[in-house]
Image (cartoon, rainbow, N blue to C red; front, side, top):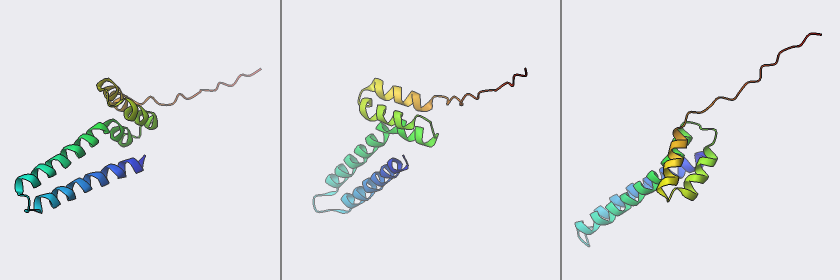
Length: 106
């Protein structure tokens, strides 16, 4: 799961570098560069927001992180699936039940 977090950070860095590169190109005019840079930022933000349930589950070390990731990737395009994955990522993690063994004396 750390790989997914690293991929997200790399995509964000690529978006920042691409924005800087498009703003610095004055051949087509500053407006075209700003528009292209803004589009890259929008796409990057949408991607990061789409994977928000996964990032939250990773940050909280949720025991069902892999399942949350699958639900988010397969059903996240629907609003209901994304909200379900987000709520699940924020859900309180129940501790493992410990079995209390009692000794029986005969």
